[in-house]
Image (tube, rainbow, N blue to C red; front, side, top):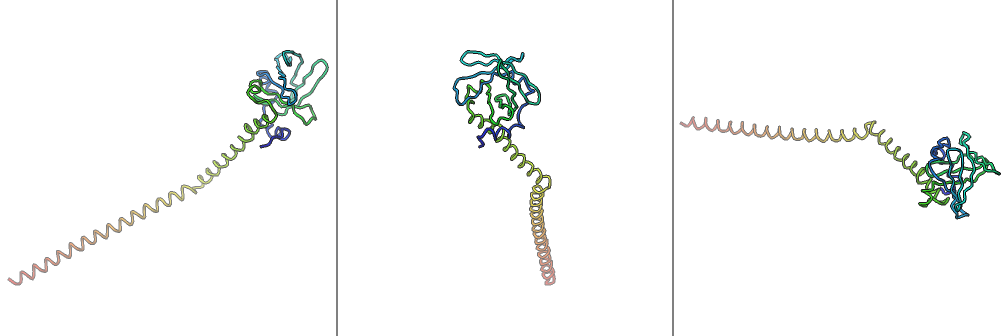
Length: 208
């Protein structure tokens, strides 16, 4: 399983939501995954473009805007950062500052509280949900396509029907020949015995 997120993110990007689906961003609270700081830092994107950042009960207010082309602008009083889309679904946001190789990861708060709270677990989540399922679906489609091609070509039906029909006809022909032979024996025996009876009767008649 691939665990390097800088490699994994580009592989699943085509399966991602786009940032223009802002309703999905607004519908959840997002927790920053920080491998160093164990404190929970919560990000709440509001419809009025406010961004509430909460840590230990203290709240800072910043702002956010979607600029199109999968780009987010986040700014506070002193800093403005332009973030590019990496990956986005109902449970995960992966973004990075332009030209930076490192991603920042934000996890749906409900999923974060249930264990999706580290980069290793994020890698496993992406692999299991998107890459592994995609591989399984491709294998299943190939098997179905292979079976369908063989079925449409008549490979299965031809062999099955041919053998089946041959065996049945063979049995019928064999039974028919045996039956004819039995009838022939019966008729021959009947004629033979009648002939013998007639000859014996004539011989007996001459004696008298």
